[in-house]
Amino acid sequence: MISEGAQKVKPVRIKLVLLLVCLALMGFYSASVTMLWDRDEPRFARAAVEMVRTGDVMVPRFDGQLRPDKPPLVYWLMMPWIGALGATDLAVRIPSILATLITALATFHIGKTLGGEDVGLRAAAVGALMPLPMLLGSAATADATMLAGITVSMAILVDRALHGVRRLHLPLLCLALSWAMLAKGPVGPCIFLLACASASIAGRGKLDLGRRWWGVVAIALLVSISIFLCWAIPANEATGGELARIGIGRHLIERSTSALESHGGSGWSGWILGLPFYLPVLLLGAAPISALLVPVVARRRQLFGGDGTGVLLASLILPTLLLMTLVATKLPHYILATFPGIAVTVALCWTRVERGEVDENLLGGVAGRLGRWLAALMLVVMTIAFVVVLMTYSGSRTVMICVAAGLITTAVLTVNLKPGVSFVGWRGPGFLAAATGFCLLAMLTGLGQLQSSWQLGPQIARVIDSSVAPDAPIVVDGYHEPSLVFALDRDPLPSQRTVPPLIDEYPGGVTQWAQSKDPTWLLITRQKRERSGLEAAESGCERMWSNGDAGTLNYSTGKTVSLELWYNSGS
Image 1 (cartoon, rainbow, N blue to C red):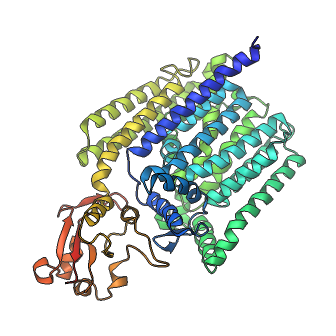
Image 2 (image 1 turned 45 degrees about the vertical axis):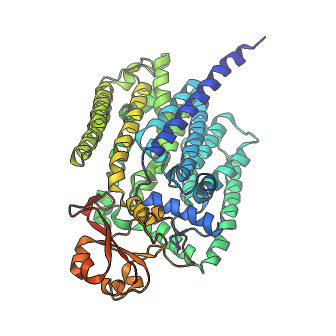
Image 3 (image 1 turned 180 degrees about the horizontal axis):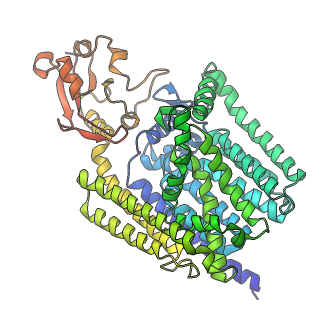
């Protein structure tokens, strides 16, 4: 005879498995309808490919040059998939898809601990379907990988705070913090430590986070740092100290104190003006679920009472927001670690109202209306941006109409969000999150169709591969996008680039290149070629490909580029 507890557990497990399967399918679809987006994805992907080809798994390199931007975990996770599927776009995106499933499981555990299994399932679903986590959840970058480690560590924090000591806390925390640190360096453990400090201070007397807990945290940190150093020390020695000098000096200290690559305002005035940067990012990145954030903040005391739940939820979100607000360099994905906490907060508040535990008016009133209209506005902005892009660049009208209709309908329903109805009802946040998620998949489909014309690297690689000299060296002048390196898929010699700038190989410029006695390729912008005076009839070189005088949008720079591919047979 099956016990009542077993009967209740089984449907939850089935629902969780079905949710993970759905999220995996959505991740694989979104990873398959677009190529790698310049510039970050091809850099990560190519570094992993070069690890496979060279056998050097310690030092990340892109096109033969040191890449100290990130630690090696994401490259290591990409390597077996590259070995199985080849150097393909899907292969290098699979680790992020799998990491998203880990994040969903950890989010489920946080929600279950704070409000029961229904809250856990709802939080896991909306956490994966919000725009920012969903887009990064299938990207060939380190963000989804790091998020998995941070979210698992946060789940351990919540479990310890409410349920006390468990044997698994220490080994799991060691694994989670090591994972996060090997994914993106010290930022992951730093976010976790800030959350622990916030919960310990604000939850004193309510949460079980005393000295014994901090002993566990200290041991886990020592273990994770030791594991990190097992990679960092030999890798740094292999690069003559360059890995630490650039990795710490530029990508840690300089990124924190100044706006790198114009990602943020310059000087004190720019830093001050950039303080509200993450407010619209949060509203758009979590839309339409962000509709509930305003009333939740305004009525936090009535919604959470004094049992420590509100303290834990705030600790999952606010320390990360504060840290990244103070950092000078600002990018939307820097606050990705807040989204599991946001998902749990929304799911818990709605479920409490739905169960009748708190008054539904707490999510209404002026604060509720303001939140709903702001979230709806974000969806409208997303719609307008997508429509403008597809109309400007002759995208699919069918996709454009479907996405616009879906997002506008979702925006209208967001304005009419009704606290107290079923979470998955058509006026509930679960339904709206799912609708937005499917609209995002359709958006990626439309953008993927445009990307095939925007992304010039694969087009150039196909021309070269089908020519009489597929292995001849290539130099470039005026176009240096990483997607070209990934598409050509050439193995570099030590410290040498496979796609070097023209001036590095031919100091005399185009004239010297045209006089080369060996077969070679030149990719050059039309403007630079015209200034050089290179003509096919006079030089004996042949123009093999061009994207036309009108050019093509280079979305990485926002400018149109007109390119020509020339071949010099050397004869």
